[in-house]
Image (cartoon, rainbow, N blue to C red):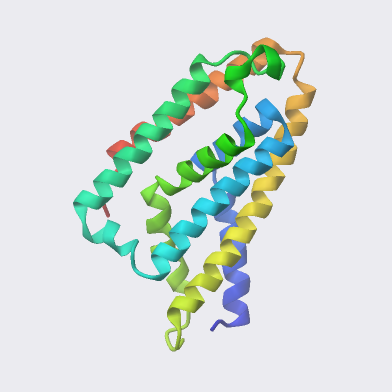
Length: 211
């Protein structure tokens, strides 16, 4: 199913790709900063669940529809863009993250909502599906008998690595947030910056062209 050198290269490449900033990382860091490491971990698990959707879709050919159909790609792209813009506006209009949960309920989400938001942030990004279609097959030997199983294996390895890196972000962001709780002005600036980044990513996704 795989060669040891291919697996090592895949793991290293996946870790480097996971370190690149994007909507998933921003969402994990936002929830970790606002509600602590538990909420950040739930957000990471929600995103990981979304990644599994893309893995299974790509392994069984469903993601290929996004490449072949301009309508399908545009529909998913616009839904994802609207969702990212919504998250951006939510952060921009939210209160300072230095307040506690009882006095700032709009800034705090239940674990269920946090999980679902992480899940939707990932699932509604068609670029994730296209990434798996382009990246994973490069590490599957041409003579592999069951390519679907090999794809699922590499996809799961990637997702485990992604969850490990996500929890590095969770812990480091939660730690930094605890140290900055007394600086309401700085926290407000960070919230607005992250909100602006979500808006930017949403607009960029809306303008993205089908490959």
